[in-house]
Length: 94
Ligand SMILES: [Zn+2]
Image (tube, rainbow, N blue to C red; front, top):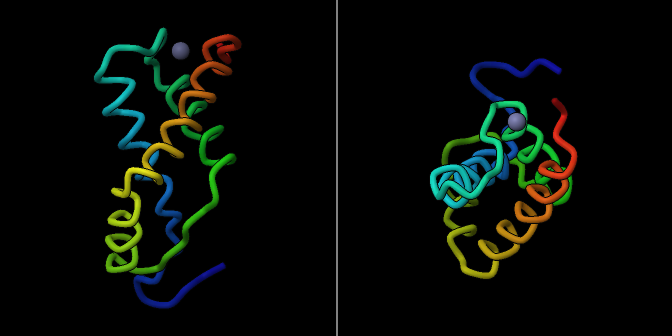
C-alpha cells in the first residue's frame, strides 16, 4: 500500500524488542550465538508472540515506547524473548 507524504506504518514493538534483546541479552553476553541470523530469528519469533502496537507518527512511537517502560510490560517482553532465545538456541537456522 502507498501512503502520501511521509506517512508510514510502524510496529513499535519492533524497536522495543530489538532494544531489549540488545541490552539484556547481546550486551549481557548470555546468547550462545550472536550472529545476525540468530538475533533476527529471535526478534521475529518474539514479535510473532507479542501483540503488535502500530502507529504512523513519531509522537505515537514515543507514547507507546513510554508505555513499555512500565515494569509489567517489560517483564512480558523479557519473558517472550527468553522463550524465543531457548527455541532458537536449540535449533539455530545455520
Ligand atoms: Zn547464530
